[in-house]
Image (tube, rainbow, N blue to C red; front, side, top):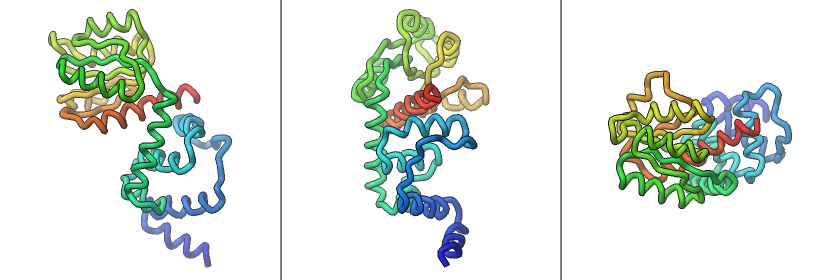
Amino acid sequence: MADSALQQSLSGGRVPLYRAFNKLWASAYLEVTEPQAASGELEVAAQARLAAITPLNRQALLLTTLEDFSIDDAARIMDLDTGQVESLIHEAIEEIDRESTTSVLIIEDEPLISMQLEDLVRSLGHDICGTAATRSQALDVVAEHRPGLVLADIQLADGSSGLDAVDDILAIQSVPVIFITAYPERLLTGNRPEPTYLITKPFQESTVRAAISQALFFNSSRALG
């Protein structure tokens, strides 16, 4: 019986479960037009945001971000190879980036790293509203501009703290923040500002690209929600 075969397939954990549901979804090609009332706030908002992305891209991105599956697991769920899943995620991120262009404030006291981040941000189609090497410089930028995203180091040039700079900014406006730091333990206190993302130095540019896309995507999702 199909039901018993399905039940047996679900006994192996999350991957078989999602794989079974993916097959059912694909066979019916059901499009969710209204979020379910029982869904969480972030899920409802993300669902609305993902509506503009093609279905396979949507699946790959959701599985590897909201559901936190690895690329290999997502490939098993979707009956694709890992290269195809990586390509779908890349395409989804590009679609999000095209719709989420914003201005970025970079708080970084190392000139070479700051330049690297500027080039990376511009390559994604975003603008740089300012760069800062100290807490006071960051506040000067925010006094003139309202960034849509902040990339922040923690230990700054004059001994000031990027954490304090971010606290100042979040007191003025709500904005997604990505911390890029060699001192991640300073964020693992349970008291860090939200929303935040953490990248450890030395970083891979691909990691920063993915974090920027996710931060803007989920920030837009909250706005839609």
